[in-house]
Length: 417
Image (tube, rainbow, N blue to C red):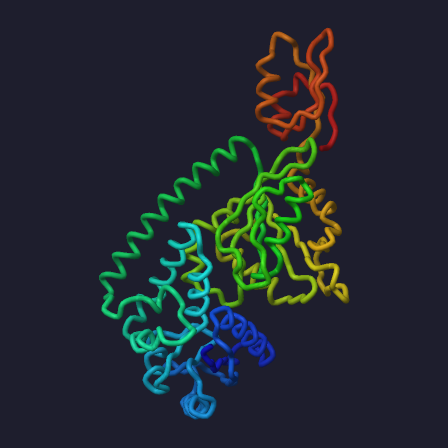
């Protein structure tokens, strides 16, 4: 297992925030079998355009590399091509940044064609301006336990023209996948099945919550992979769920977010994140046992970046069974336990309350000679009750406001869904 020195710069954030970010970086490194030997933080008022950190701190790091027998230096922020090149030259050791590390983890986790393409696009976009600066770094990979796929496997002779060509090909493939997803999305819209998307920090319990909701609503086919690890889920998973005689909804589990998520990754994951942007409701999942306001803010920032910040959001805290205190939070939330299933029923009721708050249960009387209306309702709506009388078919059905207007001449009783 390679030994790493982590480097953080306290510039616009407090030292405590920088320390917290470095702790997260340590977990990210461990995901690629890189063990943290030591950490170092510099407090600075300006960022050095040459080294990112000051030249004095670079000299200090050089000594630490020799004393601690360091194999790799990892910076907690994204380095510019020039900074990366200068640090490689000065330290004479492999230097990577947080973005490179996250992209490498994503490369390890990606399974579906869509995720593999998106990660490849992000990696190549990241590498494009850094080809010269990364050459010595890439040449050092291959001997140790750190063997990230993607950037580390790229041939050194790959030039800018080849990279641009590959980026173009990947974008073309993703465009085709995006078109296919758009067709599926239009079909869902036509069938009026709403979409609920799980969002939140990585390892917050989104996949576990999806399995809990699926189990409660009697859809236990193909449980979603869940494990206490960063970025366990990269590929979008979707399930059609339904409570009793209520209308169905599609529950989508997507990639988790993390602090300082690379911009290349956000842009490249446009196809996957489109499931979030087009959702009718977001379940913002938060680790309730290890509550962190910064993680909530990070998720909100990513939602804003992808244009999903205006979608209705329901905050869901997990791990209620091990939480020692009530989280200090000033917005409404539902506290659940995926282990004991406590409050999963409350969450389901809340989901339906948010999705169908404008819908109403209507009792319609449909004349026998207008059976096509009854057939259309059976095909497109949730029928709660049907009875046949002498003057027609009586149907209790959930209607949207638009449908209520269409069928107003048949409605004989109405109440909130």
